[in-house]
Image 1: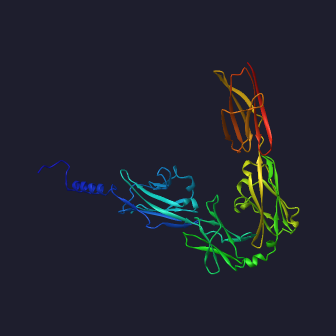
Image 2: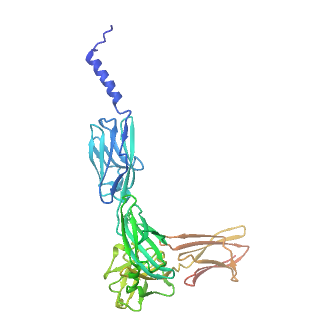
Image 3: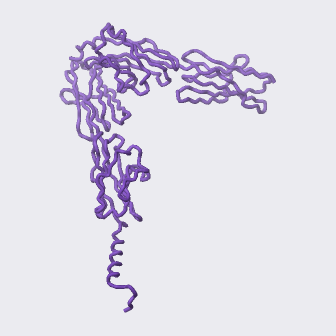
Length: 454
């Protein structure tokens, strides 16, 4: 037997232990997480858990929670500390490693103040020097919103129109109507709008053709929580309210205003009725959010559309007669379109619509020569600040229309149009060409003339 210097039984045992330790070093491990999705309500906390399998010490491993890409983590734990350099901005200050068991490789990450945007898939990744493994889990976020609010829109040709609204739900809830016998009823319209905070508003419209129907209910149901909220309405009772016999009157013709000017919307009750204790709401496509809401003598700014905040004021001098005027400052191109004025009392709405047309008279056009080649002159006419798209036309010396060679339309951040139009003038030693821009709403035009004597 050969006796190597320094070799003894202790050295042999140490070598064997090292080999076994190397074999057990995490070159072959898995990660497991919860078998079922984790459910958390908006505003509460959620605990995300994962575990090394087989259980083993972390031994300087990195543990990383992420969503789409490992390079943009929710949180990273490394060498006993949390690493925040690459952390997603929306999780800063909201995550905490509440448990890191370095002996058996289990970790728990707490996300505080759960938001709708936290909903979805998460990955837990363990990284050793030469190996990594990961698992995913599903975080289901839910919010139980407000009880539905039912309003009657008065009577329409085909019956009584009811509108059910609710807010603060996540994810999108189910909405349905049922009669006193529990039978579901077919809705006319349904809208689902996600607010800036990620929560949903729902709006469901039902037309009841038998006004003698005694009781109807609107139910809003959370498919994640398995919970619901509901409200009921008695149609005969609502038809006897004060507002059910009134009408709302507004402008009979579209209102035309130029960009940057102020505009007033006036609507009133007929016959004259004191509206001081009523809710008055100016809306566009949906009741929430609104252009303006007047309730209990106050402006409800929380329900106002962001683009109208700071741009509106309500004139209430004639409110005792049921007449109210909404003033909008600095009209924008995006303000164009239909508006509705709604009066509400005792769960009954009456409304009228009005049409706002917005116009912008652009700059005086300018004509420049872009080139002269083989007897052809190319002229470009430019103008900006128009809304809606203007009518553009070239004319020759006799006033005859000339076809344009090209037209390029662009809109600036205010929605105003800039136009570059070109025309080719052939074989002429004397050029007298006119370019005109006209606004179809204002019936006004601006022109420029190019004259060149060869």
